[in-house]
Image (cartoon, rainbow, N blue to C red):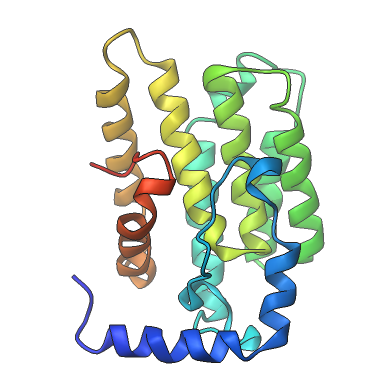
Amino acid sequence: MLRRGSANLRKSAINAVASNPDVHHVHRLAPSPREHGLILPKERDPRFVTIGRGGSLTDSDHHLLALWAASCAEHVLDLFESARPEDPRPRRAIELGRAWARGEISMTEARSAGGHAMAAARDLGGAPRHAAYAAGQAAVVAHVAAHELGAAAYAIKAARAAALDGEGESAGRLECRWQRDQLPEAIRELVLDDQRLRNDICWSVFHC
């Protein structure tokens, strides 16, 4: 449950974002659904826009979102690497997403690695494809924090696709619960509320 007064804070932050041209610029640069498969909300949630861009997301929480997304992606990475053991791009994306969170590389480097990871998925299907997308989404959290659910959702889709016939839903719920167990307390409420709000546009994978 959201803390009392959070709705008013969210409304105020939306107004701040709407009046900040820098935020709209970032939105235009964000990967489109057709490019990377994740459906972002039509109205950007200011809680996932950094303070420097007019939102309310602190740098430390942005880093935690990136690290959590990397963990989600890494948990299913073997489903890609078992199909393409010679392709390092998804693993590299996860590594660089973490490196960005540690302040070791630029956002542009992490975002580029994410794009390369998602390119690795192009001629694949099923679990390997979803796992590569999860890695790519994790890396681009450095650019757009709201991609944190992209990493989580694709990882759940990978787990579902890899399950035995009739066990996909169960496997997806187990993956979702595992992901929630990894959430740092500082961002737990934020992510869980984001899952509630975006579940319908993220293939309804967060019913767990």
